[in-house]
Amino acid sequence: MTSLQDIAQQYVTLVLALGVHDADYVDAYYGPAEWRAEAEARGATLADIGARAEELSQRLSSLGRQPVPRNDVREAELQGLRKVYLKKHLQAIGTRVAMLQGSPLPFNDESKALYDATAPEWPDTEFDDALDVVNRSIAGSGPLVDRYGNFRNRYVIPADRVPAVFDAAIALCREKTRAMLALPAGETFDLEFVTGKNWSGYNWYQGQFRSVIQVNLDLPVHIDRAVDLAAHEGYPGHHVHNVLIESNLVRERSWVEFTVYPLFSPQSLVAEGIANCAAGVVFQTSKRLAFERDVLFPLAGLDPATATRFAMVNLAAEKLAQAATQAARRQLDGRMSETEAIDWLQHYALLARPRAVQRVRFIRQYRSYIINYSRGRELVDAYLTRKSGEDRTRRWAALGELMASPRLAGSLQ
Image (cartoon, rainbow, N blue to C red; front, side):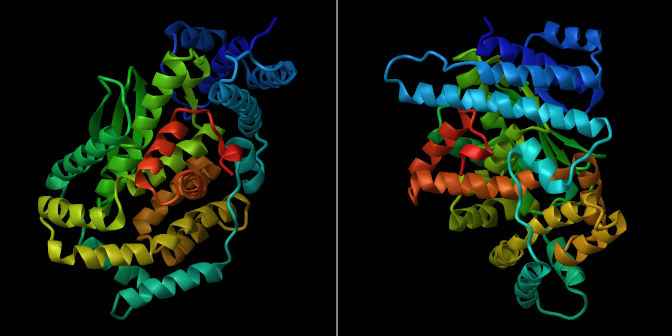
């Protein structure tokens, strides 16, 4: 008789098989090396992988309730979430196979099929209102994108000071995280600075509670990115999330499906949502400002007296981060060319042209993945707020519980 564990193991081999066809697909794998070797040697076709995913999905639907200890409500909930997790991930495999075979979906349908969520479509007038707020916060004449860019360029970390600034940001985020969450002994990371990427930062999880965190130096790194990336990629973001998955789901429960992370899957929305909420869990706004002003600004050789103003302008521009999702939807649905998307991002996201070009390259490579940052953050933040209210200790606890579970977007709402 087929068990949930049997299906989970076969799901892992399917993800690895699809990774042979799609270089971006397998973001992390730390299961048995022979499973990967076997998947590569077998050379399953896309049609084979799609058919197998559908067959496994049907077998999964026919399984009854999994046995759990009597009156163990938490374990029963996790078992239910596990089954949903596998079901939606098998369906996402089928969607990715179809895309690789030349059958892309409209943006909203693609994001729903791959990530279990869609992002709202905002009218341009909403971004116009946000631009008005930013315009009022930056005096001067000339195009707002130029004034905004010139303002932010005063806060670029000199290249030779980037390592020291990031070391300090990661150290404090790690200290605060370890004080609130029980992390396994030996968890660690390596920090690398790279170029030639379409992203600003990345966490490559290696297993054994270890990550490689990379920061892209293709474009100037602004001082606010230090805390953002330290929390997002490290503590309590992707690194901690993966560590708790390995500790609680892989090692404690032997749920082998979590030894592999398919990038284009429902897991990504929760992962990016957690990572984008991470800085706000570590720092209250006033305490983040104090840390940046008193520690990071001096390390970067910037004037601490201007830190408050920099933070106020960043807050005014926060809404504009959602413009990238809007540009991606229009571009991928054929309503906007790449050239038009670059121009639109310069105007509505206030991105300097090199950053707008980089963002469009990201959209071309990762497509609807971009919803995971804004929509993921909204859903995770709302979930944590429902669980904890304004109590920051309870918010940390809710975050730790979420990271150690197979919860997806549908169960966050």
